[in-house]
Image (cartoon, rainbow, N blue to C red; front, side, top):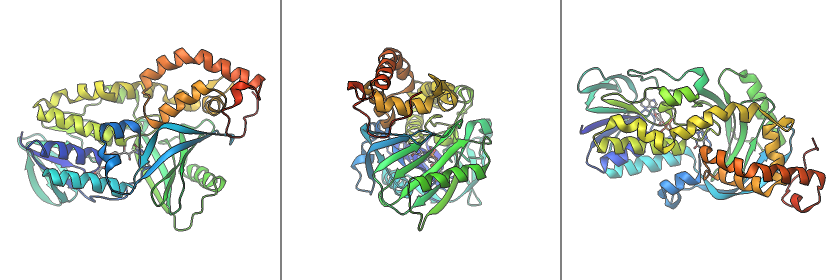
Length: 396
Ligand SMILES: Cc1cc2nc3c(=O)[nH]c(=O)nc-3n(C[C@H](O)[C@H](O)[C@H](O)COP(=O)(O)OP(=O)(O)OC[C@H]3O[C@@H](n4cnc5c(N)ncnc54)[C@H](O)[C@@H]3O)c2cc1C
């Protein structure tokens, strides 16, 4: 397999192309828009920076954010410093950076829409910009709205989230995340180099769009965000069910999927950039080793077993209760009251704590955390309450 066609020049397709071209494959990347401002927070966690240090070293404008704030449904806040900063790019800049690297490695980059992929014959046939193309293998990295599905199924409503938001031309320095009552999703505000990405995400079909818009506009008002010059956006995001992660087909004899098209997204946080890059990278490695069929196993040992675990607990995180209150509210309270819990959240937010490790860590620390929490409620000015940086929650 020497000629590879990649549909989609986002993070998954561009990195896959760069890796393959640098090992001598003839790679063509087809993207209908090339570098564009895809609706996205643009936040890259520590695991992405660790795996791909050029994301931090590149000269392109980016925002390095060290402080985050969680807001409970009742409006109470906990602010903390993350154990590693989050690097935030505008997507046009990030996609441009990745496509430039792919071109420098030898990829041919063509601006056109792929409307058909036929993997039944040998070679694979594609229709790109109305013209027929051939290749030995096709990588489908066309994102969450991908309609090209050789021998596999589309992502169902249960596997998707809807997102609405604004790009706002204003400056901020901290990340904010707000939870809502009985709501599978959250509101966010992510600062970028010269603007803010503010939005809401929720499981598809669970809330009317108008209701999401109302929550979003309330959040904007509460946070005092000036909306002059703001642009509205809306997009879908995979939020895969455990069964989808475990068993959806993402590779065939002459095709494979990467990134959002393969549902490589954290079902709790919606983080997809790292998983897009990593899946593109792992797929390239499998092709370089002439073993494309090993790609799902490679994904599984790298991260998809962890994402499956996350999918199993996602609903409980957003809708569950702990000590008589919503888990998300308790999270905000514990953050203010428990140093051990704050350490844990600092690591989760910066992307240096995975879900399966979380189980063990919670098991080891939950006793001490609940004890600290209870003590700090009983003795609010005592030694355990010193971490509070914000208004206290009412006592349960
Ligand atoms: C609102 C929102 C906020 C998010 N925030 C974050 C965040 O802060 N951090 C994070 O890690 N993740 C975030 N994500 C997820 C992240 O955006 C995605 O996981 C990531 O972009 C996936 O990369 P990809 O390369 O798989 O797909 P995409 O980035 O979607 O790229 C797909 C590319 O394919 C092209 N394409 C599509 N169809 C065709 C076709 N038929 N022919 C040719 N080209 C085609 C498109 O033009 C596009 O460039 C967010 C997502 C949303 C929707």
